[in-house]
Image (cartoon, rainbow, N blue to C red; front, top):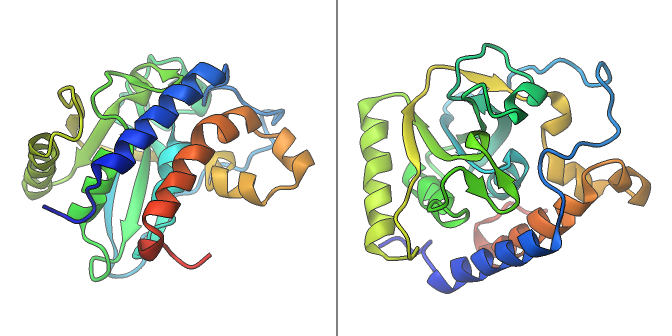
Length: 237
C-alpha cells in the first residue's frame, strides 16, 4: 500500500470540511467584484515536453488546484471544465449545473518525479469521493467527483486506485466518483487560474476583492493540513 495513505490525516481533513461547511455561508459560486470583460479570454496551457497529464474534479477547482500545484513533480495545473455538452462554456454557464460540465483541473506532471498512480491516490484521499455531487458547501453536478481518462490503460489505472482506496477503508461510505471518457477540456477564465495562490499573495484589499470567506473557511484549512503532512513532497516555496 502506498505510503501516501494516512487515515488520521484524511479524517482530520474531512472534519475540517464539515466545520467549514457549518461556519461558511460562502461557496465557490460567490464571485468577486470582477465585471464581464475585465478578465482576459482563457488560453490553454501547453504541457512541457515529456510531461504527462491527468484530468479530474473534486469540487471547486480552486481547492483541487491549490493541492496539486504544490506537489514536487507537478509542472503546471490548469483549472477548467470537462464532461459536458456545451462547447467553450463560461463559469456562469457551468454554475447553473445544466451544462453537464464539472469543474476540473488538468495536472501536468513529470512521470520521472511523481507517478499518475500517486497523483490519483492523493486525489482520492484529499477530497470526499463518497458524497454525490457535493463537496462541503458546493453542491450540483458541476462539483461531482470525477476522473477523466483517454485510454483503456488510464481507465484501468483509475479503477485499480479506486479499489486500493476502498480496500484501505479510508472512507466509511462507498466511493461514488465517476470515471468518464475525456472528450474535451476547456480552460477556465484567467481569473480562476492559480486562484488560492493569488489570494495568499494578495494584500488585505486584494483579498477583499476575492472570495475571501470561502478561501479562509474552506480552502485554507485543507491546504494547510496537506502542506504540514506532506512537507517533504512539496516544492520549495
